[in-house]
Image 1 (tube, rainbow, N blue to C red):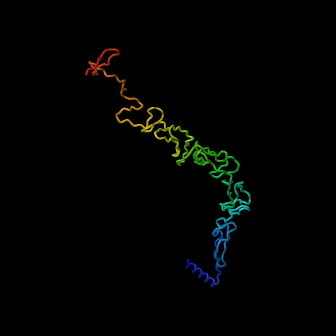
Image 2 (tube, rainbow, N blue to C red):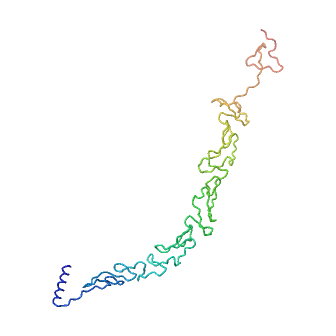
Image 3 (cartoon, rainbow, N blue to C red):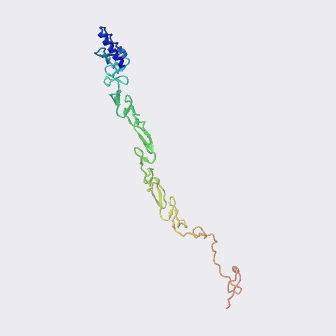
Length: 303
């Protein structure tokens, strides 16, 4: 290419020397270089040297092939007063009042165009909706906390009135049902409220109620046992049935228990007088006792 250019210059020079008028170098059309929305610029030389494209208003790029910042559309038109270019189009600015953010927001001109910045727990394009976790069930225009899972602990939640209200299960109290109600306790700290002794009203016959363990129960006096302390403890007895448990020995293994329950053996009968022998001086084995008024064994006993 360089050799061709040099040869061309030599020929032109020879022609000029011969008195011939050189032909003007062809200049490419500007539209071929810069498109339809620009003006070509050349440096003063012979032939003219192309410098670049001078874009028409609203166009930009090396060949003026796109819209300049703040212009849009096929003809790259400028945005009207009170609007700004954003996301490929013109949008209204806050000062034009075209964006209504209501009483719970304010308009700001963001990079993508005017937008509402919400306050007071509101959200949405026009700040007219309560944000997540809030509600305006009473319609007074104020967003307040809404019911949330486990928000009432040992109870159920209701926010239809516009306020969160916990209805506690039996034995629980407090705004979130996390405390024990009157007459209930959590002495063992397991977060479970059980009745106190006064509420449980346990009948501890021979003992007293204690709820320090977290559950009310009877603590029996010495010698007594059972849920209500009405039975005798091991090693104690109430053989006479007077309701008092006294110390008592346990019967040996294999021996009948004669205390209070009767005996398995026949009780002894009355003691009979000895029966004299034939001489009347002593009992005889297997001999019947004399009948009343009958004879048998009378007379003096001889030595």
